[in-house]
Image (cartoon, rainbow, N blue to C red; front, side, top):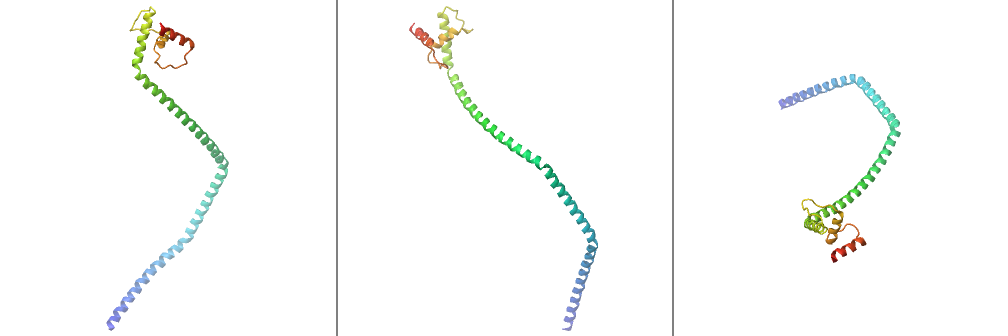
Length: 178
C-alpha cells in the first residue's frame, strides 16, 4: 500500500512540475507582451489619429461636394424623367409603325395575289391603245395617262385609292355603254 501511495505522490509531483513549467512559459510570454504594450499603445493611438483625420477629410469632402452632388442628382432625376417620356413616345410611335407595317404587309400580300388582275389590266390597256389607233407594242408598255384612266374605268373590280369624281363616273358610263 505504501508503494501505491509513493507512486501516486511521484505522479502528482510530476504533474505539478509540468504545470509550473507551463505557467512559467506563460509568465515569460506575458512579460514580453507587457514590454511591447507601450509600443502597441502608441501604434494604436497613431492609427486612431489617422482614422480621425481620414474621417474629417471625408466629412469635409462630403460637405464641399454635397451641393454639387445634390445638383447632379436633381439633374439626373430630370434626365431620367425626360428619358422615360421619350421612351413612352418611342413605344407609341413603334406601335403605330407596327400597325402601318402590318397594313402594308397585308396590302403587299394582296398585291402578290393580284398578278392576274395586273395582266388583265395590261391586256385592257393594249385593247384601249388599239381602239385609239395606237400601235400595240407588247414589249414596250405605254405610259399614256389617258389610256391608264380608260383601262382603270373598264375594270371596276380594281381597288380604288381615291374618291371617284363625277367626270370619271360619266366617262365610265360612256365606256360601258359604247
